[in-house]
Image (cartoon, rainbow, N blue to C red; front, side, top):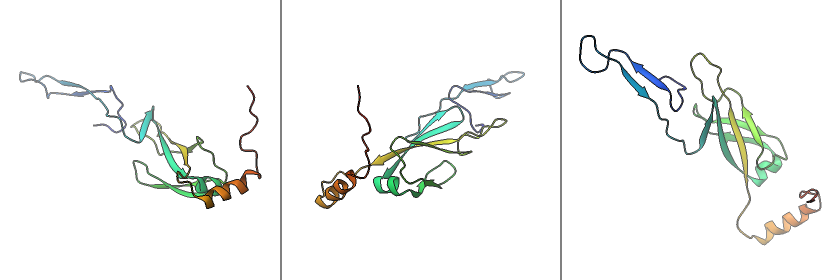
Length: 137
C-alpha cells in the first residue's frame, strides 16, 4: 500500500489478475477506515486534544500523540478552548507531495466535581478578568 493513499484511491496490480496469456491486472479501490482520534483533510490531520484548565491557563508542555509517536507541544499561557495549533510536518507524508500538518484543537476540560475549595478559588479569580466579554444580540 503506498504511503498517504486516500480513501477512493486506485491501485493496479499488473499481471496479478485471472489466468491467461498474458495474465490480466487486478484493479483495487482503497477504502480507508475512520480513525477514532484523527480526521484527514487532504494531507493534513486534525485531532482534538484534552487539556486541563490549569494546563490551559498556566501554559507549558503537553504530550501530543502522533502517527510517528508522541511529540511535546508548548502551550502559551491563557490558551483557549477550541484554539487550534499547528504541528508542521506531522500530517500525511505521501510520495511526491508536501507533507501535511497535524492541526490540534484544544479541548479544555473543567473539573466535574463540586469541590467547595475549587469553587472558592474560581470565585476569587472571577474578578480578575471579564471572561464572558460583551454579550449583545
